Length: 144
Image (cartoon, rainbow, N blue to C red; front, side, top):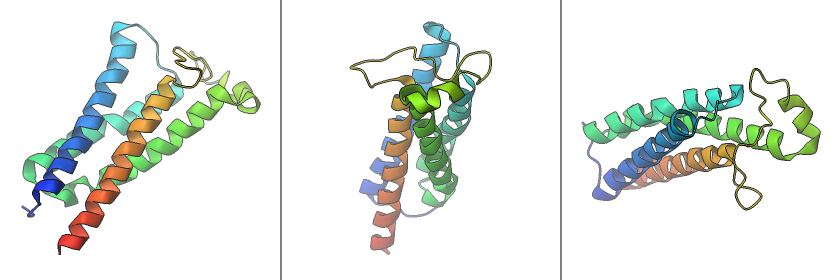
């Protein structure tokens, strides 16, 4: 077990909570509201759901090195979410989103305030996880 400061433990728990909220949010949209996920949504889920386990184990064991794959998954997830958001919002890419599978990737189930969509929410979650993990790694290097 690695020694983590209280600040590092709190950051790790915050990252885990963010991943858990994002996972539960995606399940809420699909299982409770009934929105069928498109292909890009499935890729984002594939990248988000393991983060709950990765960061949960890292927080439980108080070992940041266990969470390193989470940094890569969240970075890739942010890129996928940004692309998906662009497919929904940029007219030049909306044509590409129409042939995404059974559910078109340019379909916008929610659009709060003209810019908050499901890929936007996922992207924010991935970015928060990525940035907090970078801050956590920086904090750990300073503690050594």
